[in-house]
Structures are given as structure tokens and as C-alpha cells.
Image (cartoon, rainbow, N blue to C red; front, side, top):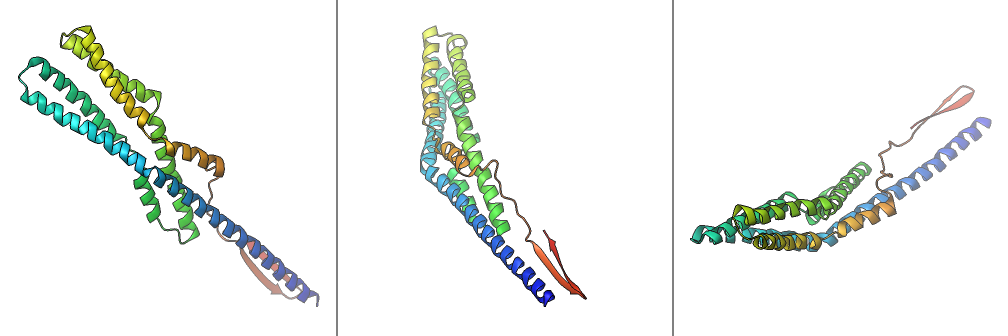
Amino acid sequence: MIKSLLILSVLLLIFVNSVSILAQDVTSDSLAHERIQYIQQALNQSRKNVNVWWYGWLGIYGVATVGQGAAFLLSHDLNTRQDMALGTGTALVGLVGQVLMPLNTGHDADIIAQLPETTKAEQLSKLAKAEELFKLNATNEKIGRSWQIHALNEAVNLGSGLITWIGYKRSVWEGVGTFLLNSVVTETQIWTQPNRTQKDYENYCKKYKADNNHQAYEPPTEYYLSTYPGGVSLRIVF
């Protein structure tokens, strides 16, 4: 009788613990899925503005490079050739910078959508990848508006002004004009760059504490129940 009651108590304990673990797994899986959906939605919402900005400025610099390069080759006027050569060079710098520092919110949202999440391990792996891409895009947007980018652009613009003034032996005001014109273009590019993903990532961190609360895969708890003459033993492996 005592042995039967003991076995019944142990089985009841296992049942209650299993229900608790199942509830925790359901909650954990639901939270992971919610976070993945948050990231995908945030990246997708930035897709249109990011593509308009990135491809727009890529086109502007591309057309400026080709157009001024062609004008340089076709013109026989020395001043025009000098201006077009300098303009081609600065436009090419902008084109290369746009290619080397793309914003990939839409592309990365598609990558996340294609990752499987049928198992807990796949789901956690997908969440980790989604957070990695989310943070990368937010960082790129932050860098794109940083003081370093402003300083780098102004250094190039100052160089173009000095080349016009000293290198081409023009007046100081022509050099200033070249500097100001290029500054207007580059500053417009910087201040029109979308930064929604950066704000969405900050909100995500506040809501889910993503940087300090990464989920890790934990193997399920295993129970081993055995009987022997005069008693019962329970071994739990976790």
C-alpha cells in the first residue's frame, strides 16, 4: 500500500512538472515567434523608403559620372574639361560609397522569411539570425548619419574646392563655389537617408531586451523511474 502511494505520488509529481515545462515551452516558442515577426515587419516597413533613397542616389551619382565623363571627352575647352574631370571624380567617389555601404532592409527581410522554424532549435536559430541582421541594418543607418561620414564628405568637398582654386589656378571664389555645391549634394544625401530601422531596433531592445535576453536551447528534462525490493528510485537528468 505504501509503495503504491509512493509510486502514485512520484507519477503525479512528474505529471505536474511536465505540464509546467510544456507551458514554459509554449510561452517561449510564442515569444520567439513574436520577436521574429516584429523584426520582419520592421524591416519590411523600411523597404520602400530605403530602396527609393539608395537606388535614387545610386542613379544620381551614376548619371553624373557618365554625363560629366562624356562631357570631358567631347569638350575642347580647357576650363570645361577641368570642371568635368573633377566632377566625374567626385561623382565616382559618391557612387562607390553608395555601393560599398548599402542598406539591405528589404533583402534581409526576405532572407529571414525563408529560414525554417518548424522546430525549437530552428526557431531559436532563426531568431538569432534575424536579430543579427536587424542590428546590422540599424548600425549601418546610424553610421550613415554619423559625424565621421559628414567629416569624410566635407574632406572630399574641401579637396575639390582646393583643386579648383589652386590646382586649376582659378579664383578663390570659384573654389568656394565648388566646395559649397558639393557640400549641398552630400549633405542632402546624408539627411535624406532613412533611419526608421535604427529607431525600430531601439524600440525592440527596450521591449524585448534583445541584447541581454537571448534565448538558448535547453535539452528536455528526462526522468528515470525504477523499483527495487523495498523501495522506488527516481533519477532526473537535466
